[in-house]
Length: 365
Ligand SMILES: C[S@@+](CC[C@H](N)C(=O)[O-])C[C@H]1O[C@@H](n2cnc3c(N)ncnc32)[C@H](O)[C@@H]1O
Image 1 (cartoon, rainbow, N blue to C red):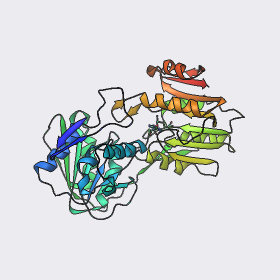
Image 2: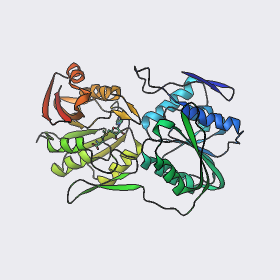
Image 3: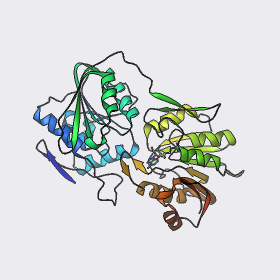
Image 4: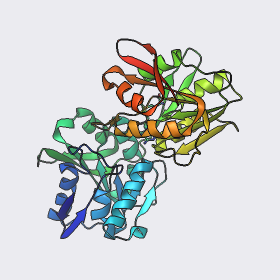
């Protein structure tokens, strides 16, 4: 898809690509940020960009050498490939994680407001401490996703929060006068059982409790005596790996997640020589026939999108990495109807358990 603004014409595509043509690489909220910059002739220096999933803002603003906050490995790949597609030099842009200390002072912060309000808070915490009294924040969102919490959180970190008029069904929050000294925690502790709490950074799945599908999977987990090498695929805060480590502590356990904050969260919950963390969006780094057991509560939501293509590609990866005699257990919402897809990939697929909402499959290579 091509977009023209600020006298530039750029082509921006999604990574991973999708067959669903309604899924776009940016929306009007991103465009509104550029329009605002243009109309107000904002002098862009020392800028930071947040939640730029496929690189729309990073590409249009690349000449100003912005800092780009990377949440996902797939986001980083997307931004790299779009720079290369448009023959732009990426070396001016500086990549940071949402936990880095940003150098002072940040003059402008551009945020595409994420669905998770906790993640928005984590962004504002990082951004506001790096700002001075003249800095500004521009936050874009689609009007249909507005929640009053956006204003509450913005007001926690900025003295002035102004809401723009609507344009193409999107709006901006314009933040000025950062409040310094506001310190809030960015780690949630959630209850696994009476004795155990799992830690996770704000914005990591699934918010303030252990996901019900995950709880259901834990009840029915089928770890075997011979499962010596295990993968927690799409590991989030690492709760499944944590459970397995508690049951069979000598097992070699690998955790894979696309999200930087998820992997950092799992590091808060697990450690030891048998535990290996991987911040990646696929299983290419693993050999064929590597794992005895793969366990997963796979992703199907990305921000406001429902997309099972990523889960399907992870299933194909899982089959390749599974030993011939290995097994792959996953939980899903019933309505996703994964059986049809799993049947096409695996030799056999059994239903291990189900309730009114969730279903657990066990797949054999
Ligand atoms: C439904 S959550 C499950 C998290 C955790 N296992 C649990 O049960 O609480 C799905 C996870 O998939 C991750 N994810 C999304 N796309 C991914 C990909 N391509 N590769 C690996 N992980 C991915 C998300 O970051 C999220 O943490």
